[in-house]
Length: 154
Image 1: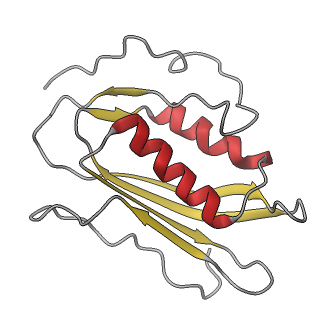
Image 2: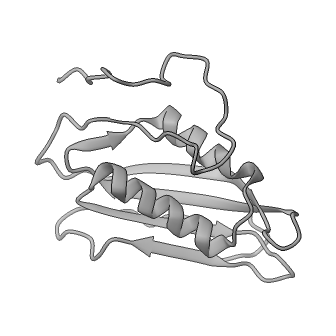
């Protein structure tokens, strides 16, 4: 089993301040170590928060990020801090979800990536936002994201 190369990481194993905005957040990556092996990596963030850009009130989402690595994996602490940086960031649901997906694609150049943003109701209407880089590769098992359509999610 290959050992993960953590050289150059600046946040793992360190006390790290929460970034003040997504633009200030530093996403980091580590080598995949199994290049050529198609495997799905999933991150689930059931307590994602951001702010409504119009009212400043909090918005809540359940995010599910699936990707098939190429050469890189996202370092999970940096992802956690990046997601947390949205806590005081004002943006619409669509903007938050797609921004996260695009930042990860830019960092990782994955074989495939999708993100599902399952947003809790605002004004009585839940908004679900989905972004993916293209069709999933054939022959790879990609499980359902497991988040039901809104019926009092929780």
